Image 1 (cartoon, rainbow, N blue to C red):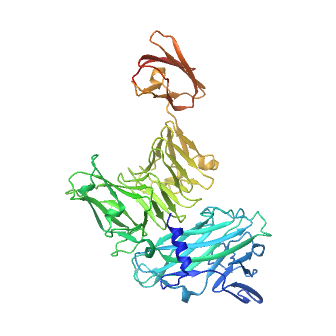
Image 2: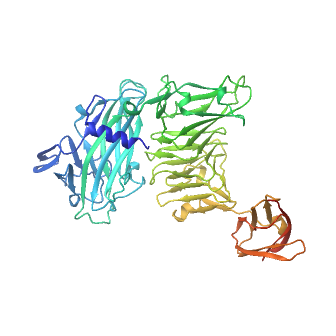
Image 3: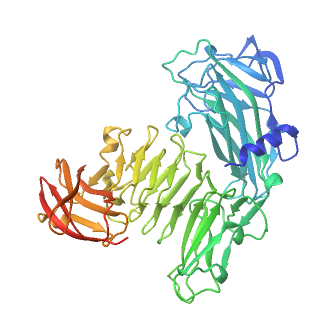
Length: 575
């Protein structure tokens, strides 16, 4: 989120502590007996406990053999890392619960930020989310809310990953993100735990961890908050000439100026997977035909959802089953995903046209069911996931759509499943058009463990695009099946030239056979005399090349030759 770090600096510069903010700078220390060994005295930040556990969880049995301490230098608390067991996570937990019970007013957005460094570098840290607690390095913010029967309390955790961001320094670690409060009147922040996990194969001798500050503060006091809930009518003034409604997120809230927007849960049900809330979007006045409504998040705007909340098309007028299609488009803005499962179904799409999808948790997820898709528009590049955090769930009938020259970089976990046990086991399919790229990073994973019989696979139709799955392990690569169009016996049936007639350029599409090698393209005049000639390397399946022959207007012959055969086409140049 582009404006979150600015908010953090503003809060820090004022150094405020209000009823709705929590701030700690770690330099207020105390010297006393080690909590695990009263015979040993240590210096630790006041109201904070630095410890390790024996089962790799923050609330597990404490490793009582280690009393970890540090010193204050240059505005930070410094911990020599030689004291810790590199095979166990290091936890830093706030312990003064009486002062931590920070009230969190309902239906607001909060910023959580933490600033630290590791010297001489952060190279020894584990990365990604494939660790115990689904977080290798980050912060657990626990929010105390009523339980489902309202007979007691439970804690909803929001996670923020630690990353080397913003400053660019190779030893700086920053955790910053936003998360919403829920609709409950009685809720408060009651847990703050910072986690570090190191590479157990590397020596920590001579390395130090520096703690600067941590804060939790409301966002809207700085840059406003617009809320969306219940019925969302879209006036007919937003109907375009293509028959679709295009509306900015700011036009469907009551407030007139905001940068942050929050979709709220219905207060009549308890937020849970069994009780999702929908913001129903429909034309106003409603129509007898199904319409497509595109909700756009533009530059400098941020959209957030409360848990178990999402958009859904309202019913078509006088129709009990048919719903309008609602597409969520990110056009330069930010979508913040925390403890949510954002579901698209019935033809709805998530469209990416620039901006950011920010995944703050391992469980941050978008799910695409029958007829719906994750759609990256032409020429755009979307990073899905963040260093292993975040999930993409493809359900039966859902897919990924990559326009020409679009790129999807998978940096999280791709889950393949039917998402409904009543559906027969089946596979998933997607197309890779010319110039489109699907790339899996080293932190990415793909799994079908939730599919029926663990049989589901992703079939990728190779139509001129590129699939890079080399960073996946052997088993995960086996879940992706490349499908190539097969060349036909008649050479001419494998060739398409469009447009024809053409101006300065045209495009040649060719279906290549395995191990075909190369293709020779010759331009001939109407009498069959050679004008120019080029040679291209062919790949299996669909190949595309842009041709700029530089010919004068008129009729020309285009001859194409390969080991598969040859064919001659008539083409017309008309500048």
